[in-house]
Amino acid sequence: MLKYYKGSFLFTAICLGLAGWLGWETTGTVGGTLGILWIVAVLGVLEVSLSFDNAVVNATVLRDMDEVWRRRFLTWGILIAVFGMRIIFPLAIVAIAAKMGPIDAVILAASDPARYEEIITGAHIGISGFGGAFLAMVGLTFFLDEDKDVHWIGMIERPFSDLSKISGLAIGLVLLALYLLSRSLSPSDAMTFITSGIFGLLIYIAVQSVGALLEQEGEEGVGDAVTGTVVKSGLASFLYLEVLDASFSFDGVIGAFALSNNLFIIALGLGIGAMFVRSMTIMLVEKGTLAEYRFLEHGAFYAIIALAAIMLMSVQFHIPETITGLIGAALIGISLYASLLHKRQEQAAEAAAPGDTSNHN
Image (cartoon, rainbow, N blue to C red; front, side, top):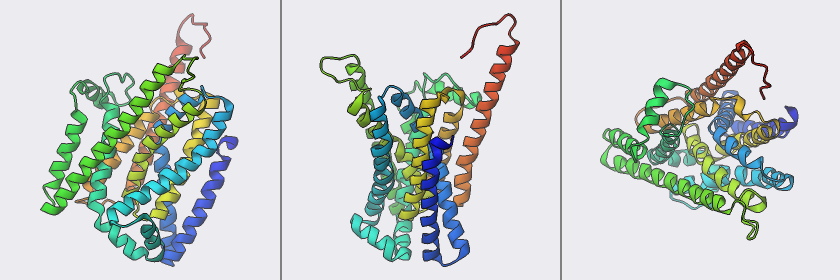
């Protein structure tokens, strides 16, 4: 296990050291410093839990990638994932929300954190609408799938799977939630909330469309030795994985605003999570243990829906950051336990089967 995660633990130690320094510089108190360290740690855990599906897809593609491009994905790809999507993209959100240039946003965050916090707090309604709508679509789409045949909590998931035949149901549910929550806001805030939520829906649709187009092109190129357009090899696979990674990272990046509005805290926490997701991906590929944890992905998507609900409701209610993080961690932990329990039950059933001498792999 250490060979897969030693780099991630070293990176975590560096990030926590920077977080401790940042906490002391900004608060000057032990309590404030510990609070920031806690938020960074929770963001790291939340990013891992929300990005489990990312690790699954990455592992699936990496199994068919040659060793050279696999190493490039785990080196060049981590730079793009950590410094691109976890720093540049949040900075773009902050800059848009605060209506200033990205350089000005960085300078403001470093030189006047109080003013920076005030500006971001003023943009909370728009951020919550955008992030909550996007996360809700991510979660609902997983459960509203008629081809989904593995259910963790059947009494909840089977009806949702059947409802997937209703076209556009997920979008309709999100729009309804945006409308109902906006009724308690002032007219100007309601317009901001609904408009931001609609843009969250549009971004989700755009991300899904890009992924579908790439997948279609990949399927058309499989086995085409003449043109060399096989998506599972070399550079094509590398680019394919980076687009998928960017798509999956939206939920963690947007969801981070439910825990903190500080750009540097978000970058440190999500960077830790991104490193562990990369380590998890390569471990799943090399050890081939992905199928052993049957319900982990379900737990991740329940965590996404919980975070989406918290972000949307935060325009009316204040929910402590620690509760937000613990809900996600608890759902992942319970799904892991359920997966292990299911595996033991299957093994017991196989052992009890009379006359079964086959070799189960």
